[in-house]
Length: 287
Ligand SMILES: [Zn+2]
Image 1 (cartoon, rainbow, N blue to C red):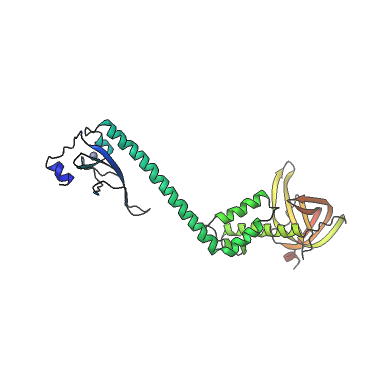
Image 2: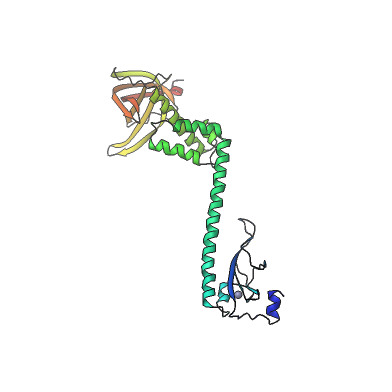
């Protein structure tokens, strides 16, 4: 005889002091996040999404049974009104707690497994770009900022098109700024390994040059100061830094630099000539 029939035929009273806690199962309704599901099961295998006592829809279904195996599937509020021994109610309440934690841990574990799998597939699919990033990551003179940027590139599995960044073929604004940064780090390594800061000839120079790194600026009591980074073009190992009131041009711009060399400065392993009073003539302006 099933439970509902037992209750309806008066063979099992909904107020039953002989009921003992068996288990809890949880109903998850279907939603935009996924299909409905049931976590756990009752000893008899029966499941329901409504309370046997009051008929209301419930998500946490507590199963109590008497010595004959007659099960009551109820919400915790109803369980409290059925004369069930306090110890059994306590078991039920703590079981819920344990089950929720166990379900949460399992969910986290599955998410981690899925993320690791996603990362593995992503690394495999982008093997060439990943090896290019790893190559520059192995450079011992990376700044903390550069190191973090490169680490981030490899942990962004599935979110960034790393090929577009490494090959400098960006399609989005985010890829563009990252591609510029990646190119800049690659070039900085090349410059450091091939540097030739010739500051023996102090004084006025005039050379073809390229802005190899995006200029940055900061506010001072005397106004905005710009830091500009240049390298001779064609490249011969000589880099220049100009710090002052002028922004000479944008990243990658080519032109002619006329300036006075005043000394040299080493930043992140790269020695550059410090120039003053620069006159920058961008290439397209001459044309
Ligand atoms: Zn109920």
